[in-house]
Amino acid sequence: MTNKNSTHAADEVQAELDKQLFHLKTLYDVSHELLGLTDVSMILRNFLLMTMGNFGAAQGFIMDGNSHTGEINHFESFGFEEEEHPLIRSLGREALSKETFGRYFSSEDLSHEMKALNPGFPVVIAFNIDEESSGVMGLGPKIVGEEYSDDDKELLGTLVNNLAVSLKNARYSEALRKALDEVRVLNKAKDKAISHLTHELLTPISLIKGSISLLSKKLPPLPDYDWKATLARAQRSADRLHEIQNEVDDIMKGRDKRLRNLLTNMVNQCAAEIEVLFAEQLGEGIVVNKVREKINEIFATNENDPVEINLAEFVTKKLEEIRLLSARRSFDLRASIESAPPVWMPPDPLEKVVKGLIKNAIESTPDEGKIEVTVRRRGTAVELRIQDWGIGILPEQQRYIFEGFYHTQDTMLYSSGKPFDFNAGGRGADLLRMKIFSERFDFTISMSSTRCKHLPQTKDSCPGRISECEFCKTAEDCYDSGGTTFEVLFPLRS
Image (cartoon, rainbow, N blue to C red; front, side, top):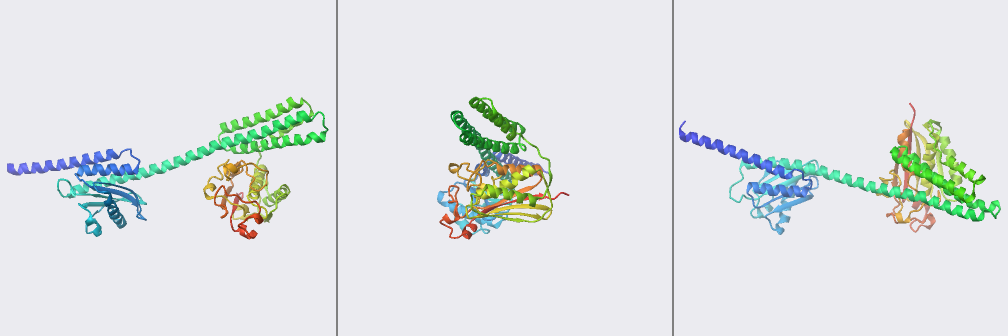
């Protein structure tokens, strides 16, 4: 081999080494620039600028979009006038629509619009990101006037593959951020719930204090029948406090023990305050002893063991009780009770589920409306189904209905009314308690609902009687407007 040939071979080897070094350095620089970025627009912008710089291009564009619809999500370009952007976007959409990833397009592959661009794009490549998205990148001519070599295109293909990984990671990060935002919203709702619960606990205590104050003035000079009404009013407030305490206790049995103990202690302190106030105002005696006995009775907690229960007979009995309690209302409460195998449940939580769901249906149904309660065997389970043709629940509220302390009325309109009254409201704890019961006692509870089409917003209100609704000429018009169905499935014992 001559010296001339040796020198030429050495030059070729050096040129190849220089090329490989350039490729490695470019790959490192671009990858390092994208490292840690989670914003898609910033990733595309930085990648385009780095790539243009490494290849010596003065113009370029990059975009990503939906692979199925062709909609562009992000678009970045440099070196072009604003009025040229629509033409570039059109070119990108056309390249995306071909779904030919990893191959370079020529002017013959695309429409004549590509030729209208000056100086045009000698390099256009489409790349796949994931199942739903893809991208397109185009580079203008090199400043030095050289053509893009096969080595250049090979390097650009490698860079684009790395870009696709970065974009995919960014999409995952975006999904995580959205999930985190939703968690923050839920946490805010829980903070509101604690505040709401505190309000509900304080109100009965205030009423009891007022009743005791009246007792202290009226009790000595008046006969028994006159002060009994005031005492009864105090008792109703104590019962309301008891109801809240029961709901919190049932819910917290399935939640964090520390939080449960905190709330239980708070309620027990309220109970102790009631007893002390009676003693201070009335002195020790028969009345105070009766109050003390009642407090011990209503604040005691009982754990029930599961037993076999005939659900048909159980629901029939509860329906009779509910009809008496809601006699002031005017609605059609229908029952379709079929014989079914017994269910395995403690009586106390089963009663809370049955009465709670029927009560919820009654309070959601205007007068002259209808409710249907069904018990039947369904495959390997016994089904309890409560369907009302009431106002229904908005779609955006349905996902939170079992979360607890979430009332579906507008906050400004909310108040706890008398049980079984239309739109009576409530603390929103019943359904959360039922959901926890379902986890503890191995049954399932689900809901489907259609909001009344005449009440599309939370602030919209129903008059509470079908004949007073301006949209309904007959009861059937109301029945066709909305309603809610709860289904409870109790599995048969094997």
